[in-house]
Length: 205
Ligand code: NI
Image (cartoon, rainbow, N blue to C red; front, side, top):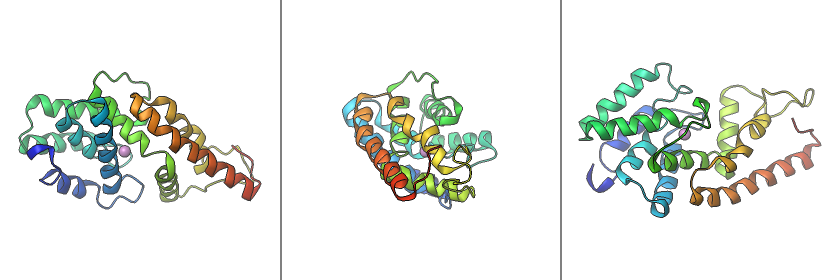
């Protein structure tokens, strides 16, 4: 991988792993997370080579997408070695990927700036306009209704996911730059929800 570029083998590998995902975790998500991570790195610092690899690969061993996450991690490690990542770099990227999923403990301490940046970059893609689209895509793929007028408190709806996760993300950012970027996206979530309630008269879960 020359000059931290994504033009070499990394992008085709990620495309091959995530290409057909229709649950909001596909290649376009990986590319947006990479873009966010680069923006954060420019302000916050950190090793761009590690951040690039971890940002693009972060969902390639996610349990939401893959049954055998250990096998995926081994596949990723083998791939990184094949593009001349050292053992230490490979371990570092693996460590970031492992801790990145929200479900694996939102308050897991992240010790490195690289890990904080990739997690913040991923969380930024879960809020704002893109966050709304991805949440609805994910819910639809799981055959979840957006809301349940008969039982507004239904926790199995996509609407409930806004309260369970999306609206909390702004306060879970690790870096000051991500916290600032999250503000506008968070306000957009609130505007969307207000409009939804205004139009439907629905009760919030
Ligand atoms: Ni992700």
